[in-house]
Every structure is written in structure tokens, then in C-alpha cells.
Length: 175
Image (cartoon, rainbow, N blue to C red):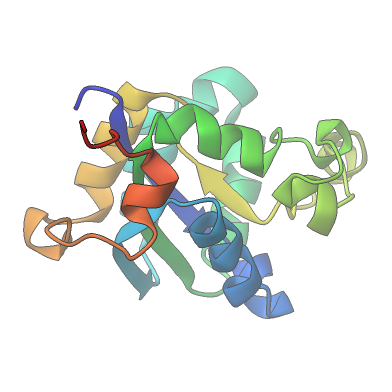
């Protein structure tokens, strides 16, 4: 199916330190998204550089100072990376997550419900932006990020969840 997509989620150190991991994963599962890969890791600077600059162009868009603060934040504790699969998963997950700057995230989104500190506050003082998680920005970015974070042998997509057919919709049987 062409509408099935995969997207990468990274639960950032602030999520782990605040004890929000289970609650956030539950939100994705309750939405009907299928977890097909997951691991807790402490990547090195080279890995994060490939992710943030090689794929996301963070330095090009926001500058070296923001990259360095982001790197410091992402390496202060482990992260949990996982892959979700579902119908139009990338755009759906982006809606669930909210915008990068928590100030712009609506209540009901993950960032809108669990964060409040903004770039307007953190950037001038050189602080980290505790915005809970990373979610792929578009389908092409998702493919690159998943390939960076997971080997093909770590992806388990050959199963269905009990709710899968119900959440995706079923074609009625012909009478």
C-alpha cells in the first residue's frame, strides 16, 4: 500500500528524565500506529551530526550555536529511538507531536501537553529546548533517519496488531 509510511521518533533525554516514556508511547499505540523497531541508545557526536546536519541541516538552518546546544542536550542521557508504521504516518505523527517550539503547539498535542519552554526563552540564554521528542519531518527524511538509526535486521514489520485491521478500516465482505 502506498499510503503506509514509516516515521522515526526519538524520545529525548528530558522525556526519559521526566518519566514520560510509557505515556508518550501509549499515545502513539492508542492512535493505531504500529511499533516496528525500538531501542535505548547513547549515540556519539558523529551519529548526531549525521542526523542533525547530514539529514536535517540544523547548522545550515539555525547555526552552530543551536547545533552545539542540541548536541549537549541529546548526549546528556540516553534516548529511545523507535519506528512507527501506519497510514500516512509521517504527517499524522507530526500533528500528534505539535510544532518544534512548544509555544506554538496546541493543547492535545504531545508538546502542547508536556512542554512550555520556548525558543524565545532558551535561545538567548544558550539553553536547551526541552521539547520531548523528535519526529521525522517528511517521508524522505523519515527513510534516511530510519536507515541511520536502525539496521534492517532490527525492524520487525511482519506482524499485525490486534487493533490493526480495525484502525486501518476493513473492506466489507460481499454478501
